[in-house]
Image 1 (cartoon, rainbow, N blue to C red):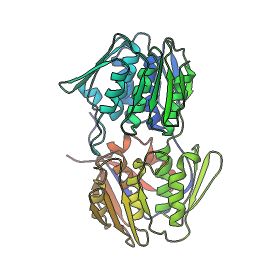
Image 2: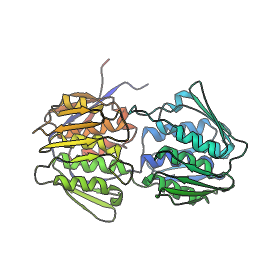
Image 3: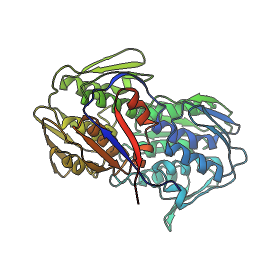
Image 4: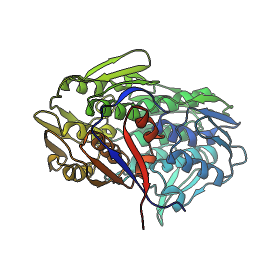
Length: 423
């Protein structure tokens, strides 16, 4: 078993150059379970080489699927031999998205037993809306011994009314509904780009999903899904993190292979700060020639400002001129990284779900600890900004969602490395 590591950053250098965005994490962790719904082999391309993807490869194999995975190139999945329906505690704890196996297995064979998921501890992340959707399709659900059990002799299309906008619930019920008899209509559905991408993947296999990207999604159940080769979309959150890092270091970076329209909420905030943001069909250039201004940020469901970019954005705002206010409306425990930023000299006051940030002239390098994936991204940005050396402990959180991030940042001029921690 590999030893513990820390990430070491010597900050203060502007990021400059060109960097390519990897495939989307949030799309990948939905598309990979969806392969279980297929009745033939299929191939997925542009998957990021991250821990969450590797965890799902192990889970598919444990269920009996044949998986040929070449990181950075492709994943071929033959789901036909898969006859398992149980995902145990150790596997499920490796990532939050393990709960998508419930919808996929329910749609595939009418039974799923999946331990409660793991992932980042950023607040309450209930799955009651998922279960409500499965129940509407005719499944019986129960929670026993830390395991979610769902089974149905037959799934039947139905109207599903979500009490709140839920990305996970929308995806999970969509997966199950693809093999249900009749038509399912999801009301108050989430609109995120990775939901649209999942729908496109399902449709490429012969599913009938319409309306993804709106709050009303119609799924006509299809008994047989054929094989497909599909490339997932670029990572929206990696794109945003790189944009923020470029602005934070007063750099000049061109981010290629991205989808600029997915970044409009962030681009608008950066422009408001005085950052220069320009885009073309599949590239965004971020540069800054003067000090940036404080802004207010409120996280919202798509197309609003994404909660996954709130933490990196807060690092950028620590040195903005004036007072910035961040309101986190999605997750109640997504300010844990603020204490680490304060260790680096930031002036931040947190009141409930609101953070008030008074801009300071400079952050100073310090030892800090990542508490979740996007908190780790915030500390990366802070370390790049700071004067001196920053040590980030628990960098494995970052590895869950960013492919080869050190290599990409080094190519832009950052001083960043990994070191083993002496026991």
